[in-house]
Length: 168
Image (cartoon, rainbow, N blue to C red; front, side, top):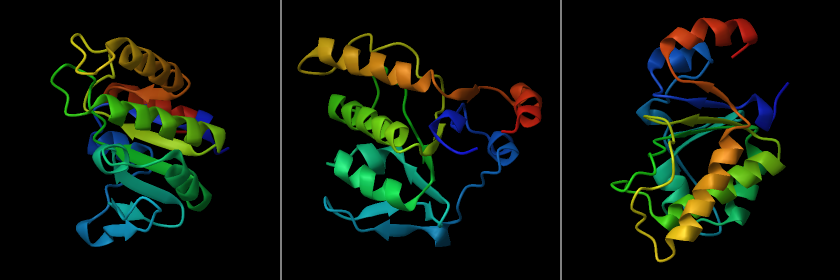
């Protein structure tokens, strides 16, 4: 069974965690650039089954939902790594988080299987938002939290035995 509900949030994304789920970091020679209406998207890997891309490349540039929809037509599973914690010191801006929410909505709507790799749990909204409208950013992060709650989580190597028996 494929689809959004088969996706995982993997924290912190150790090689053991990824390997248990059949995911292996692409080698440097697998890097590619995909043409999108908003410009070239550098990716770590783009085989017919899986797109592997960083949060910074996917959400840190002026991407649109139309870009994500075009990619969703090509790739049934996505690995997005380097998703930062939304702390006050995060390099991600309010616009980055809004694009991440748009991405999650496209993946959910198109029934794409996401594998989201974060160094730590997403946690709660920013303590000191760096946005023009902190209330809006808090609302965006809350909706992101709701979307992520639909996915299974692997938050330690100890969880792997349970996940592997459930079919990671």
